[in-house]
Amino acid sequence: MSSFFCNIFSGRLYGSNALLFYETKTHRPISYMRKPNFTGNLRSLIINFRSLILLICIQLLWCSAGAQSPAIIYAHQVIDILTSKELHGRGYVDSGDYKAARFIRTQMMEAGLQSFQEDYFQPFTLNTTIFPGAIHLTLNRKELMPGKDFLVAASSNSCKGKFECIALRKNILDTTIYAVHELLTKLSIKRPSEKMVMISKDEFTKDQYVVLKKAISETSAFGARGIIEFSENKLTWNASEDQVPFCYLYVKGAFPDKKKTTVKINIESRLNLNYKTHNVVGYVRGKEAPDSFIVFTAHYDHLGEMGDGVYFPGANDNASGISMVLNLARYFSNHPLRYSVVFICFSGEELGLLGSQHYVSNPLFPLEAIKFLINLDIVGTGDEGIKVVNATEFPNEFEAIVKLNDQEQLMKQVSPRGKAANSDHYPFYLKQVPCFFIYTLGGISAYHDIYDRAETLPLTDYDDLLELLIRFTNNF
Image (cartoon, rainbow, N blue to C red; front, side, top):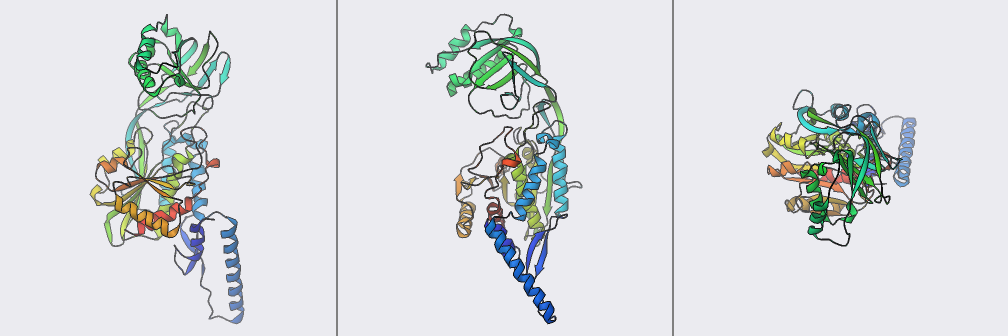
């Protein structure tokens, strides 16, 4: 059992006068048992004493038996909802992003957060390629399973029909860039619109692959109907703002050994222009200096759906981060600081940090008033501790969080990393806002695939990270 839950019982974090739980409906900490009143009659004294002993026994059993803390219970509830089929992978098909945004807004309202705007929403628009309809691929009469056996490239165009395949292969021992140029020079495709070109990524070096992909892009797949890329490596999907004029498929497995390969494809793709989505923003007003701000951020969007039967749950990425932000919101709503504490949940991160870029261009309060910002993205494990991006940029704050962790013996390690443009902290960093991006280490390997599910997300050191963030923020 993590120390955070036992601390709730002991009053270590929530005060020494009461044992605290969360109300079921409001999710706010409430006094579960106050100090027994010894001024009543003897019978009342005995009853209070017995109640105290019973609760102490429950506390000891709970802490020793590994019962889940209120924070983790709530985190599971949030993650279960955000990763449900009804939210469609929190992408831009069937209003998955909007359903997620409404849920987050409701949680902020129930936590008692205030809004800079009337409805907690900050709208903006984006472009994205979506796959709202059928996704089918048959290779040599074998039906492949979308998400498991193959993926459609995020920028792929629609495609329907039966196609003969042309193999584009090279000598695997030749690792020169010239080998790729020579291969492309010799490539000749008759009736290209009726053909698909097959390549094996594993046959190319990293540099060769870059050259090959550039040639595919510049020639629109050599004039063919599309590309089928084979690899033994893990299938990983992404999101795209653009749509290419050809079909592109990733197939997990070895290159076909048959001399003649045919495929049957049915893919519906659409470029969605000026799609309206929302950042969700709430705050707790500071007690002494409300015009200065501590900010917690996380993105709620994910990859959405690939066809009408496959969706990407995004439990670790980043339902976990949203659950942490909402847990922090519930805590600071009941324990306000001298500064205001802001909670921002971004859309459009998977498309290139679009939500955070929009926010820094249209801030709801002055960016220079931010004392510190912590971005949380992929925080559902923790077996090997946490990584702190921008640790080298803000060494004093990094030293402070390491010292706190060592004192309280929370995370296994707090590891430094330099600046990186890999999550929603970065647009703020470019605006000179002091910030960290924190993610957990170890645990599951699921990432940008159909296996990043709520039921397999361990939340290994979730409570300890929550406690570390609270203690770090309280020091400002």
